[in-house]
Length: 203
Image (cartoon, rainbow, N blue to C red; front, side, top):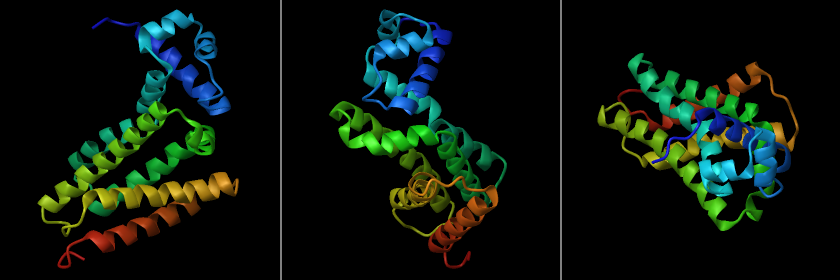
């Protein structure tokens, strides 16, 4: 496998994030991305091979997925309790969505226009995030803390509640939500999930 310049990769991914957040995936060309990064289009293809692969790597770097992968072992290592773990995940997920608000807005609008390959990439990224959280639920089930339930369903429900909350309030209504309001709502989401998933003798 070839060794690529990590600084060039970073510049290309940052340029991809910036331009897709402004113009969308369909409205952004590889030539524009390369120009924004200060490299040639040939260099872009040498590092990533295709626009689809560049998009995939951008999601892996700038989405909530890498943070979630790091966060769960860290919280487990700190002996955080179940409620605290969910509160932290929910708060960080909302924070990432807010930070990437322009990207989320434009991707939500144009997702049905994406080529099939790009929709597959996007779908796989969402599925992987769900599987990471589902793995945490299964671990707690194996420890006897949680009752038995489909872990993927619980992960999809929890992340879906937060995404829907963000999408309606911040994108559809155009609000800039304050931290206290976000915290109160995420607390309620966590309470719903905790009460629905804890073992009966633990609640």
